[in-house]
Image 1 (cartoon, rainbow over the protein chains, first blue to last red):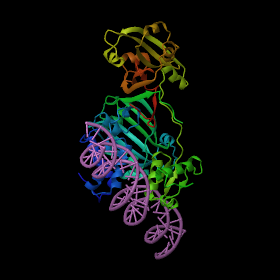
Image 2 (cartoon, rainbow over the protein chains, first blue to last red; image 1 turned 60 degrees about the vertical axis):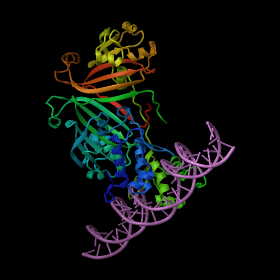
Image 3 (spheres, each protein chain N blue to C red; image 1 turned 135 degrees about the vertical axis):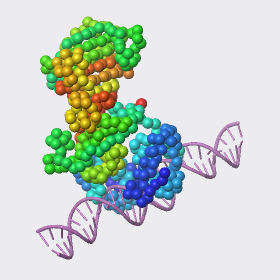
Image 4 (cartoon, each protein chain N blue to C red; image 1 turned 60 degrees about the horizontal axis):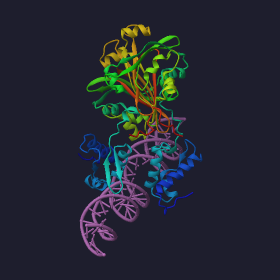
Length: 248
Length: 248
DNA sequence: TCTATATACTGGTATAGACCGCTAGTCTAC
DNA sequence: GTAGACTAGCGGTCTATACCAGTATATAGA
């Protein structure tokens, strides 16, 4: 594997994904020392500062940790993450060991329905990005998800390929948006006729309906998502904990 | 205010604190465009890369945000963090302004089903207290709840009246048990024939199924509860927050 | 044998310069 | 008047280099 310096993708980003691949494939296991910054910079014929940008981002993602004078190492995976924390679907599925995937049903700038406008706090003349996807797990449909996004330059997402990429990792890489807090409402319902076809279930089958408003690190709402999960294939899990102190 | 290049503190860190001071003192208010990277680098006679390190960290902290081609701006302050809270049904209903109530369907020491034994970590010969209730809200049934309890002297609860009393307030008053942490699983399903009658819904109506394992302040599990909520009358809500660190 | 020093690594900080794509305002030609 | 070209300024990426401080190991001296 190597880097393509002609690619429009930044070099540090290519290196980052290359390193990530070595970790998720368990070629490098937790605790392993990865090649030093100087070694990586020589091997791929790039500047050490570029290597540092890749390693820095992976470190902030909790995938690597550095020790001055010693080296950079693969971090232990976080166990709790799937529960209390905010995950996108891709990451959610990964932590459960299932193969994630999805088919984009729609990706466009739209005028939002009123309930979405209220959630995203946008005025009627503002358009939001709608990303509607059929979510898959192990080759079978598991959920229909409509994700409404609103933040500066959201239209840049129109050219992205969401079939294999996590929305949240894109948001953090290109927009410096980190999902930090969310309000989620979960209820039971019966599938609509459209959902019945997409999810390949029978009429009258139950679905889990999920509505989520997500806030970034600055406290701004950037996402409102509605999803309908096949009840026979999905369980919503949450850990509640009152022992955590409220800051400030 | 200026920077001390002889200080053992890194220059980027000094700049970061200097900029932060301008923001917390509200000299720069939210939405203000701060000086450009090149301007800061000239003003303080430092490299632009050093400026970028300071701005990058403040951006990741959510204090600044950048817009390509435009500039770097002061972000809106973080809103107060809300907690994921752990409430009993009575309190849950109270916070929603509905009159809470319930009819006790069964209160007895029983041998627990296997899934309950596993959750409560009891051996097959140990009996647990089963409290099965029909939960009401505004004179109408809203949920069927089976609550399995296991802790010292649990049999003392046999004489209690649960029609109007919160289980959790009893536990804290008489047993010094404070619900502190819980794992909850939520899924959608269709009502059983028994649930249909109790909840007064039609056959094939959807229900929200909830399973909760609750731990007390010492980390011991004391409760396993299964409930089925009328989908048309109940929405499960949760606030998620990743800004609180999860530690082992 | 044990301690102290030399040295060869590591990541951390900082420099100065370059080019890119994007934004917004201005200016020109129609 | 207005659409399109130009341009100054912005953040984003990348290079090549330098020196610092911490870590581990080998080596020289007591």
